[in-house]
Length: 247
Length: 208
Length: 88
Image (cartoon, rainbow over all chains, first blue to last red; front, side):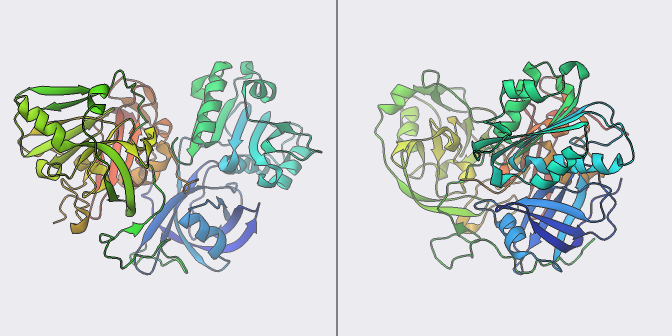
């Protein structure tokens, strides 16, 4: 493994996912490839030398041609504001990666898969789902996979259409979405915060010993991980990644 | 490897450096109160809480919460400066001056020394010259902005030493120990300055 | 008010550790010097925000790894780490 180097990627596309999130498609010179779940560090340097650095999960599958990041624009975020509002195709963006060997999943990992995402925690899980779809495109039998995605309102759902299509095309993939703050009257998905009853309903049976990945804000991730252990999932099969400030 | 840094088009710091003489060098003014912690927020009940002053000879003086609350209190309004570059003006506090506590300790026979190590719940410590916590420069603060100091900002009580970078104002403080020779605390062991004067920009070890 | 996104577990320090060691430490198993618990570096709880990185054992809370970048150097304290097992 080589030391990480900063590279200057070129923005080749932008796509607004929701009113507060934007995906960036990047061409990265000499990109070594990545695994689903990994992230990159992004560095912004101003003319006066002022620097800011943040980490962002990779949204794209390892099989994709361009590297995709999905950025949530945060209230006081100087980096996320720049990436969402200022950056446009043709611009350079300095990044290094891929980083991470813990919160990763490959198609070669056997066993059912349980993915639980809160808010922008869906991003690394999307990389896993995209990888799963691309890698097994020709294979008829796929490992049972469940995604439980928690968002505040329907307007906050990232990748909504793509997720619908993924589930539609694949009998072995079940996608459950719960809205915690406000749901339209015609909403047929779940409502309310992820709790023990919801986890019991949607997760693969414990006896199947699924590999579990939980990602989202710290309180969400910790609460879900605790509930999963209470339900009998082995702690060693639960991997978590926490976003956002501590409590 | 990029030797010359790549300049991000159109990127600049969120708040431009002010030419205000109220800002120490390299700082910007914030109206927020960011929370930075080296560990989880402790939850010590007031019944268990105490504040201790130790000297190098093994003598100590201890105040319970009720005993501390009975001491004469002050309400300093001060600017605070974090080494991570934000400064906040006109913060309002309520607390007991360290002068009051150190005077009581001396009266009880404790020997002061040139330096102190402040210690808190958890493993946090920070070292300071004694001269920087005496003469009306430091408090044990339990009130912020007219209300009890919230836990995430160091409640029930924190050290308040506003003329130095704010990592010296140890949250969840439980005491100070007089030491003859300066010894680095939690962040100082990892490269932060032993004194931390924002007006001299003493952020890291080796800064003059 | 929400603050800028920051990773808050050992995954966040992964970049810095890669700089140091040319290994991926997040999947490595760390033995806590305090309680002996073994678990991935990526699962340690991170504190410190912009001051630096403090990775704490999720069981006993001691600081397993601490890391600070100053203007001239990077300081790393491993004193809370007993053994690091890096899968090859």
